[in-house]
View (cartoon, rainbow, N blue to C red):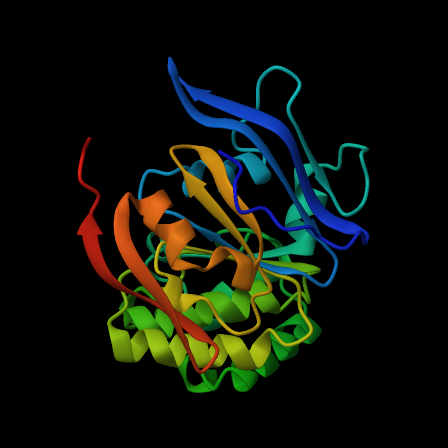
Length: 272
């Protein structure tokens, strides 16, 4: 279903997915995905666990490929761009990164690895890069964490270090894949407040299944259900009780307060 669709103003695109279908074994996990993010738009990708959000992120970054002529295009070009070029221009934050670093790596080294789009440091870091990394940590209020072992940080501290890593190379697009997973509510709010300050005038994709994490800076929403695009368009057109009740198969209300959105109530639909 592609309901609740609202139009986008035609501008140069950052990202375009065309007719993308993905299988895992014999199971169809994404079906005929069509989605474009234009310059100046900030998108939230939303849906229940298992709806295809993680698979979509893997598709975008070339970890899996679509079948039957599906395409992913980047940065207003239909010519294939190498994965290294894409990763140089895209800052990425994921809770999964937290478990992939060596136990002896410091927080500063994690931020420095953002210059190379790598997990860990495999190249020499220039002094100018170290200064930029320290400056980014200053901006996020985490400069004091620089010498500490990354794996010894709290979840909230580590997530802000990963945000600094994503921002240090001044990316054209910032992608956050469920960055608040595992955070308690106070820590989540600290992270979101930090993010809000640092993403002004940046292009953003924010992946979550909690609509209360959708920041005021988000302009558009892509709502997935069962591996398909259920709805997409401007934020206020998609974040409605009608759309989410049908997508979640549960009667809900969506309320806005202070530029943030909240789901209240959940009465399962009666089966006919």
